[in-house]
Length: 610
Image (tube, rainbow, N blue to C red; front, side):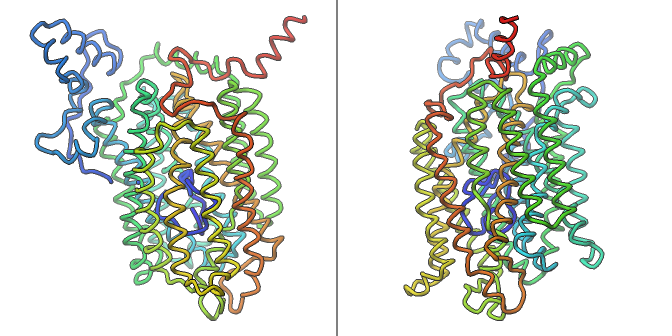
């Protein structure tokens, strides 16, 4: 997200340029490979309760075969589990890109599911439709601060991840924990997308538009969460392959955004902002293909297995409490954002919700998890967004803002988007090549400071200093986009890796939802607080004629957005573990997300005194 709606998990939320990729996912401010149709099998010998156990049993049988043992030591073993992990014959490109290695460790079914949910949906579709949203709001004459409030509301499904994860863990449908929920959410998302594309604007009010966008984000959120939970589960068993799998996910995600933004500018210019939503329907519907082939490798849970799973969840009462607490907070912010146009009401409510979440998570969760969560929530929340006003700053016509850059729709969406996506790809590659072995602290420190320095270019544009120095707006903005996109990925990737490492075994969906949802809630808080800051600065453009005075203090908001998150780096030594990204942060047998928490220690001391 940059100048429009804050997207989930924005890799560089302080950047003010339009971005082509995701988060959240943000952002939250990466190349899908057509891997063909793999043979999907859930083979397991008698007595194996899961696919993974079946694979292990097959490997043990091969180990005991004297004729096969020499082959295992020559490297054939990795291709035996699962059968789908075999590289298609003669396709050297996949091997050269490391896809073969990933398939050997994680299997083709997982890679296909990530291709559908992360590359096509979160990458391509989010960028393809997200680029239109600000222009849709502008057609309703929505002011910049209100645009941010609406954007915060439509992104709240990403903060509802915890309760979605809890429900999927505790209430499987026909024995399945993930696929049915992805199916239901996809039906709602497709309905919302089709409504925006097909219903005339006169019959679709701004409030209904927000509702349809909410349904689309609900689909993206559910699909993202449940597939993230699956690869978090896989990554915990093979942490040394974690950076490689994350590179596959985010490289394809950014590449999908690249393709989307390369096409979206001419489409918006020539055919309007509704056609992209119609064209996006096949891409967000592709998720049905891996679902029908059971690429999640789910097996129906028996009543005994379900009882054990629910028993384990009930032992995590504190985590369940956090899920419903966050759900209540997101429902409150959704109601206020749609009902009240007051930026003050929404901002103060957001800060109250943030304070409650911060205290609750700190008291309830295991210290290492609580500290990491606190750092990312604080840093995200103080990154006040000024994207609503910045959108009008860049796109207003000479009649609206005589001194402005006057960017065309094609340049603002496609040119800047393509440049950002290409540089994001470079950022993902360079992260994997040079930074994947750094410690979390060193990488977060370096990337945040570098991003703060590069973001000064935005402030220079808002003050029009670049014009007085003779630097064209297009050149200045493109240069800033290049630097911010590369460094933004370096800041973003370790956050995703560390969240995946902090999911206790057996609670992957719920815990990943809590941690990621709390971060995404920070995005909404930043949007709402940024809207209030814009009102205080008398910066409320709405695409009206002669609104130059509305941009006089925009640079102040941009300065706050740049400096405040950087100040939070002083918390790194206390909140982020001094570990490398390939290190395990939790023990393999660690199944309790609340062990050693402040609340449990206080209870223990109280019990001893009694």
